[in-house]
Amino acid sequence: MGYIKAFWTDFRQLFRQEFKAVFKDSGVIVIFFVAGLGYPLLYNLIYANGHLEDVPVVVVDQADCVESRRFVREVDATREVRISGYCATMQEAERLMQKRQCHGILYFPSDFGRKIALKQQSTVGLYCDMGSFFYYKNLMTAANLVMLEEMSQISPMVKPMSFEENNPYNRSNAFNFFFITAALMLVIQQTMFYGMGMLAGTRREEKTGLIQGASGRVVFGRGAVYWLVYMMIGMYIVYLVPMLFDIPMVSDFWTTLLFLGIYVTACVFFSMACSAFFRHRETPIVAVLFLTLPELFLTGFSWPQACFPKFWDMVSYLFPSTFGTRAYINLAGAGASLESIAPMLKILLIQTAVYFTISMVATKMEHFNAAGSRKLAFKWSGRKNTHE
Image (tube, one colour):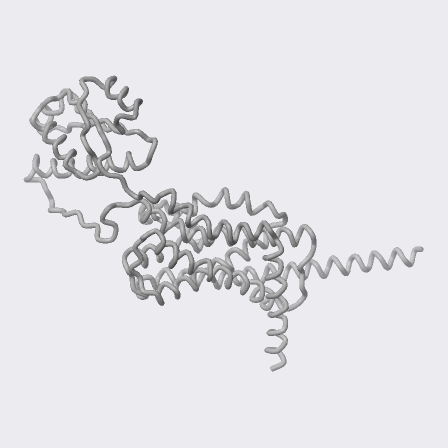
């Protein structure tokens, strides 16, 4: 009972101290609350129009054959692209694109029909206005769908199997649903990482905030502050933001809440372990700028995990955002059950244990070094008094 009472006393003291430190630091308040609450809104406002339809495209058809005309009709029939006109030369088409009268060019070389008739490989040229990623996505999607259909008609005997497009969770291919689900989880990790790192760097610069006591009490007391703050921010991100912007959320409330609790816990100890190495307040800024894009792509939201090089696949296991994002995408988009995301939650729990241990060891070493410095200063002061 004495240990429990001492633990609870130290825990409350550390919790109050860290809570005050968070709300006294204007920079941390900006990171936690302005950025943590504002970024999800900003991302959704930027990508509010998650998809485009009928992107204007012009055709340069130097083949002028049955196959090229059929290809053009089928591209025009897709919802992604609208054939807005024909040009005799590429120079004329390029001028239209420069005037923003079209956002893509579909080019058929003169030998297109002849090569198809001879069962040879032919090419279709696609040129796109890269002023927006949506233009490129729409033109490539439409052209690839038509190309697959054309191949099945040209060579029916070599068709290995039939295929049918079926996208049950994002039928409109909206980019906001595709990107926002990944960005929201990264916001939780990165803002927490940045804010905790700033506070840790400030403590070491000013040599304040070092409380003697068991490392576990220090880690739990400080970690509880961030866990509480980010559970509230996390619930705002996963429940309120999708509701405000009509982002589909088909997951069960309690399953999502359990996932959020595990993910926030992993992020807390990850950030605490990393902050042990920050000696200056500005160091996390450099780290965040360097790590954000790699961490985003390592989640696998835009590139299949199976295609990752072995090295980068191993690096992805260092970050809670990797498996938190994958689990959240399955929950939000596919309504996955707890059993379906259990492998990802297991890795998050392992990360929690590993980073908690690192935080404990780092805290213990920091207290040991601080005690050694005070002892050395005391001895030096004693020698000076004796000499005098």
